[in-house]
Picture 1 (spheres, helix red, strand yellow):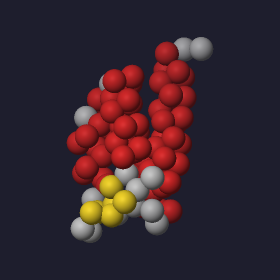
Picture 2: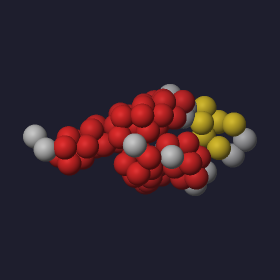
Picture 3: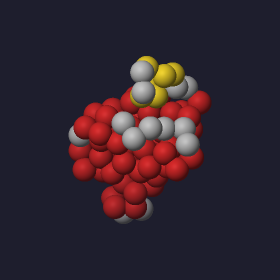
Picture 4: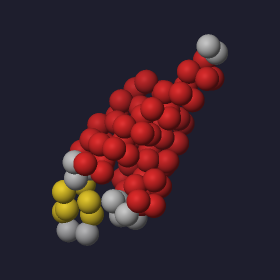
Length: 84
């Protein structure tokens, strides 16, 4: 398996874990929904994949959570800057 395929597969697995964990474990603080599992996945992604793929993973996770209705618009800047 090439390195590019490995990084793509790892990114997709972390996106799936972030969506599931962020949707199951969340609480509301003001207008934001705080998802500690998604934050943990973003940090792990930043360490394993580097800043560019971690930011991509955070964006995709936030996008999917917003499309599902389990996130807010504040998930985008919070997760992407956190993953970077």
